[in-house]
Amino acid sequence: MDAIGCTRLSDQSQTNGYGADVQARDIRQFAEAHGLEIGEIIDEVRSGATDLADRDVLQDYYARAKSTPGQPFIFPRVDRLGRLAELIIGIARQLIRYKAVVWVVGFDKPLDPKAPDWLMFQFKAMVAEQDYLGILQRTMSGRIAKAEANGWPSGRPPWGYRLTRDERGKALLPEPHPEHAPAVRRLFELRAELGSDGAGRIMRQEGWPPPSSTTTWTRDAVRRITNNFGYTGNWTFGAITIQIPPIVTVEMYEAVQRNNRERFIHRGPRAEHLLSGVAYCAACGAAMSRTATSTKRLPAGTQHRWYYRCWRVRSDRQKCTQGPYYLQTDLEAMVWATFVSTATDPAKLRALLTEVKQVEPSAAFVAQQSELDAAVARAWEPYTRGVPGVTFEMAQAASAPYVAQKNRLLQQQPVVLPVINVEAVASKLAELLHQPMTTEGQRNWLKTLHVKAYVSKSGITQLTMDLPKV
Image (tube, rainbow, N blue to C red; front, top):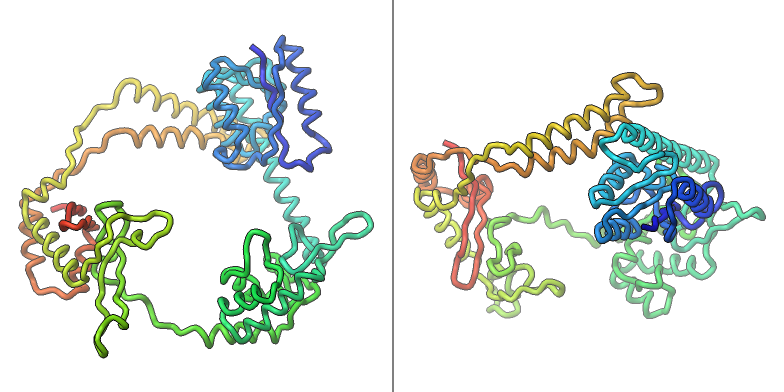
């Protein structure tokens, strides 16, 4: 069966050093020395620290391994699988679990978690991670040093600026963009007198270029720019201030912030109503939210009428088909009465309990748990033996996949619920709940017992709660 060569670059600009052509050369030489035929070489352009689910090429490897048992894969180096020890080891184990044959240049045999070479593979994975972390540290140190010298550390400059370069192509400080900077100044002028919506509307009417080709002058776009002190020429990188040519004055920025304060009216914290986090839609499972009728529809001097409804009724993306509005006083009284009726009735409380039979751990479970414990011990062995260069963090990273797998294994075991005396619970709750109580007291009870009531057109279809232990 032809083998698949697997190269990886962090980005397209990585052409010097260990580029894709050099990696492919190493793969071909290794294949020839071990009697393997190369069917194709796949180039991945993705950071080795990226989550596995976001690496499309890696997901293709998994699909090929699952569809073709025994499929050989050849990686030119351990750090080409990934850049974090947990990811590197996890990728190799997953391919092997799919019955793939995983080769890495420098190892004379395919990877096998039960073989002696697996310990060396884990060690090289830890070294790859330490090397990666060193690169990140050196890169950040370089950026900090550049910022301290009032240079631009890295990345695209903010909208309204453009990056200048010297004759060698080295990035210098940003300068105001000839087309975008006037738009920023005009936006600040408008926001000093108008709100975000009004300023954005005039910007659109006057035809100013938007901050992105995919967006227009929305409220969020206006706020992102006008609330950014950096446009006064004082950009920060961490705790370092970088001086660049300003687009607006500090006085103009302060005028915008003053307008924000004058326009904002603080109405205090939102009042929490009785069924906050308690009432749910029986049709779609979404939370019920509170809304009020407009005073325009009511006689003069009449107060709002408050209702509950499923919040997805007004949603454009996830529309709910259950559309009735429930008068607040009626629904709150119905939920509280149902809760009291359920909490004080032993038969109804017993129906809320889920019976879980106690199951003795199987022999397979015990064997798998012992195997994972041994794997964790092997991962820590180099550190405990004092192998030079092996740090605590490296050993911890090597053992992390096995620890995570053991946790998942333990979570699969049945849980035995505690025995609850429902008669005693119902009697005690009846004594407490039938006493005079304020709305705040009722809300505390519903919260303490994590009550959830599912509401439909016909009433409350289901009520759940956490039973106290007595």
